Image 1: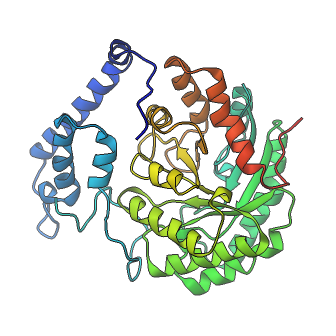
Image 2: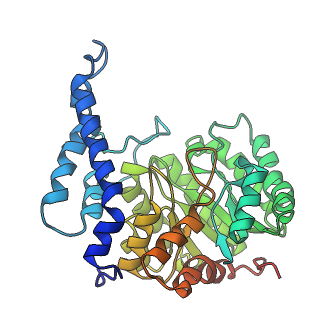
Length: 104
Length: 267
C-alpha cells in the first residue's frame, strides 16, 4: 500500500472526527445492549445472539484494537465470502452483511 | 465548481434533485440501467425503461443545463432467469446507436451464481462486438470480494481492455486489486453501505487519484444525490487542493467517458 498521505495532523483528526465516532461507538454499544434486553426469538426462528451477523460483528470488534493497520480492509475481508467458484443458483437477491457460511 | 456524477439513477429521483444538483455544479451525469426495486414482468418493461433512459431523462436533465448519458443492460439481480435475460439482451442493439448511450452497464454479479455469470459473459460480448465501454456493478456486502474477482476474470477471459472498463462500488478490500489489474475504479457514496465520503477520501489518500472517481449512485433507496459535492467538502476540509477535487470529479470521469465519442461536456 502506498505511504499514507492524510494531510491533517493527528490533533486535527481527533478534533474533526472524535464526536462523530464517539456517537458511532455508542450506537454499537446500544445495539448490543438492546440485543441483551430483547425478548427470546420465537421457537421457529434462530436466536438473535447466534445470528451469523452478530457473531461476525463480535469477531470484527477486536480488530479495531489489535494495533495492526488496514482495519477497514481486514474487517471487510472478515465479513466476505472467500469461496472462488460461482454458486449453483441464486435463491435470494439480498446480501446479509456477513458470510452465512463463515466461521465466526 | 463543475463536476460530473458518473453514476446516478435519475429515473428514481425528482425534478428538485436535478435542480439541487445543477445548483451544486453538476454539469453531466451518466445513468446505468439497474434494478427497479422489483422484477419486471416482461422484456417489454425493459424496452420502456430503455426509452426512458434515452428519450425522457436527457430532456429532464437538459432543462437544468445537465448533460445526460446512459448505459444499457439487464442488471444482475434479474439475471438468474437466463431465458428472460436473453430476451432483454436482444433489445439492446436497437438502442445502442442512440446519441446518449455510452456503453453496456451496470453489468456484473449479484449473488455470484452460474446463471448471473453466463448473462454477464453474454453482455461483455455485446460490448466487445460493438466496441463499447463497460460499467460494472460489483455485488453487495459479503458477496463483493468474490464477485469483483469473478467479474475481472470474465473480462480478462473475453479479451477486454481493462482501460475501457469502470469497476464500480469498490471498497478498501477491492480497490487495490481493481487498480492493479488496470481497470478504472468507482467509489459509491452511500450513507450505510459502500463508502462514506470520509472513507472515499481515505481511499484516495491511500491509493492515489489515478483511474478513480466518486459517484452518488442515487436511486430509490437510502442515498443522496448531493453526496458527490459533500465529498468535495470533506476533501477541502482535510486540506486537499481544488486541483485534486477537479481531478476526481471532472477530469478523471471525462477521461474515461471521453473514450466514447458520444461523451461531451456542455459548453
